[in-house]
Length: 490
Image 1: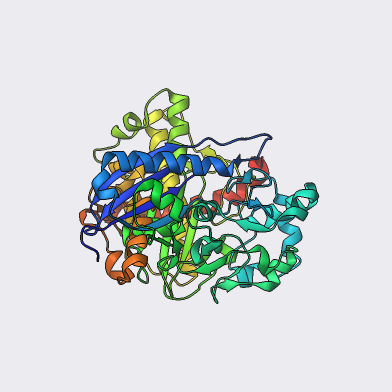
Image 2: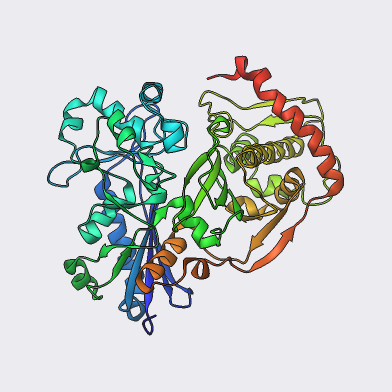
């Protein structure tokens, strides 16, 4: 590595752009975030102006440079992480033709069924067609905004529009591109068959590189403005979850993490492409070569606790603090955490949440425990269908704000009957993972060596008595969704 070299990770998120600068020893030297807003012009729609990503990136980079100017001047590599699935449609002049349709936009439900009848999206693309993916968004545009579709020359994902600004190149990586439903995920290349079903061709797509490979160098104008080398490498990068996995060291087969944020993610690294569309598992390429991953997604994880906090007028930490001692045996009530539908394993956007089995003694502490158990059971649902697809998990790293709740961790470990590993304090998310990918692309370092796990400071083990009780309660939980489905559909 170059002496004193630094590497920048850019995470193009939904709520903001985060810039993380690391040194050659991977110490974080500076980290800054510039906020973004989401436009919702109609119910169920979610859009952003693509050029707002550029403006936010400029602000975040300027803040990092101001914080550590000498370190920034030795910038050698840049990596990108980004929100997946967003449809950024460019005309012949490389200008966006309309606002980007985001991952959480639900307008294209009808188009999903139409595409499913046209090509083997599940077999080749490895995923059920859902409104969140890119392909149905393009079919919606074709039907409802045909003049925009006709003018579309390139379709880019959010982080790849930022890459175009950084390098002048149309390039994407394997992990992010797997979320379009146009990628042959096993072969790691665009699928002409899937593109044809969307009335698109290879000419509409960016070229592909692995996340740890170079996608080009920084444009000379930007290099001059920033006072850095014009030979600064820009890595392929990855989708946000794959980049986070690189930050957490989840890059070798059967390593896994669970993210307990607003939504929840169970992510497992795989040696082979291993789809399980029957269980609504996402099977995608990883951000490093010759590696894939499976993912289960829970739409309302800690958001369920936030909801309970709102209706009880009690902060989430105060709700869970009442459960920090001896939990005792679980009660008889149940909570379905489907407040905004559910992805894995049901793929049911109309599903809704429910409490069942309440009585006069069901105070907010009881409700809190039921919510935490419901979150844990939803995670177990994902672990179950990931296991059905061949994944093995002996332990999982924990990321996200839910890891601060000791009660949730104890419940989750017992529900899953596996150890939960808590990394040392620090930022190991998509921005850090992207910086690692920038380092690898710039130096040729071994991805497995660079993407090492952080130091584990605590392990939460299952409680044998709780595990047995939760096995029985989980079976009741599984029976509840089909029983209540006729009454809870939105």
